[in-house]
Length: 343
Image 1 (cartoon, rainbow, N blue to C red):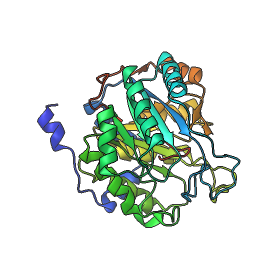
Image 2 (cartoon, one colour):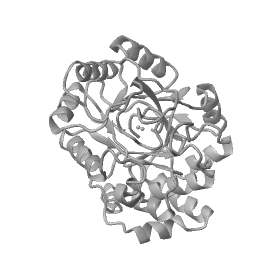
Image 3 (cartoon, helix red, strand yellow):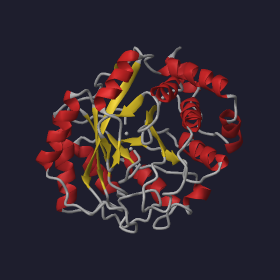
């Protein structure tokens, strides 16, 4: 397929009705359609491995209903001091040694504030780039000037999830509005940093809410380079603790639709893999996911063991994707949701 034809297939005018029609296809035809799109734009047997580290855990003033790091919820996650740069870079080295090419650092902040803590994050970014890894951060809201500083430090991607559809958003978060998230994404784009933006399914939303989220992501222009698809990890002490576990087929459907709507994006199988069968994870990869979070923890929640993940890829004939970025800056692909368990 030519580059021109590939570009012609990218749309930014999806309606919820169109997305719902895709979502409601029988599962196997939906997966077939998504797989065909995936093979046009991505290597058939490669999966990018990403590692996510919480560099500042707990004490977040936001009230996100899913998040164990919110100071509004009693989840047993205490506010901790920010990690030192050396600690973070030691974790990044370990991640690289086991196969990760992307390292994401999350801080439980509502927004970035200029000062020593932000300067330390900039040093972390520089250090990760010196290791020849993609560098991503998720720090909450940020201004144009702060985004520019991150770009100058070499940041490849900024994660800032929309979480859910606009109409359902106010049921999940009251400490900010949907437009705040969109403004941060615009600031990231203006600085020339790639966007990592996805959401979480299983938070009590309707299927239409889910389709609204996917349409909103696809209609961003340009589309996010990275789209994390999370299944809710219901944490005791959060308002969503009693919600049922997401059916794996629902996750497969969300991934397949994301792949069809956003052909060039990396679709990241993110939170919620812990406890999924190998077969369910493979179906997600078949449906268009081509990246996973890799390592024992996603910020504060469990993740499958790295050895298990490598065995899964090996047994399926898949291989870790190679590092593609420039070591000191430049823009690479993109992972995670905000400072919480969901990438």
